[in-house]
Amino acid sequence: MKVKSIFINLPINDTAKTREFWTKLGFSFNEQFSDDKALCLIMNDGLIYSMLITREFFSTFTNRPVSDGSSTHVINALEVESREMVDEIVRLALENGGSRYRESTDHGWVYYDSFIDIDGHQWEVMFTDQNQIPQ
Image (cartoon, rainbow, N blue to C red):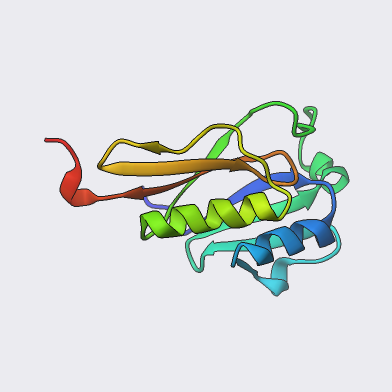
């Protein structure tokens, strides 16, 4: 089986503040699927998106309680092209209202760092050096 694309749905508090946060990290949005209730964050155009949905609207998609951002339900991991990009994204997240939940880790073949976004979601940003993966 092969999926065409993936949409990660996450509850948020404020579309304007969330848009500003992710824009400052260098990301953009698919405006066709964005409005005052939801934003379509482009992670890898044509493949991966995150639907950032206001908590009120998000609650219409489920019959279970919506996380308030104070607990961990999922850790979103993003693989990027370099160690420098890992550091840059995390630096920008921290400078723009995000917070750190653990220190960076370097295993030689994989380097990653982490942040919590302004809505309480945990993100790991990683770079994998395929030539260094242990055999």
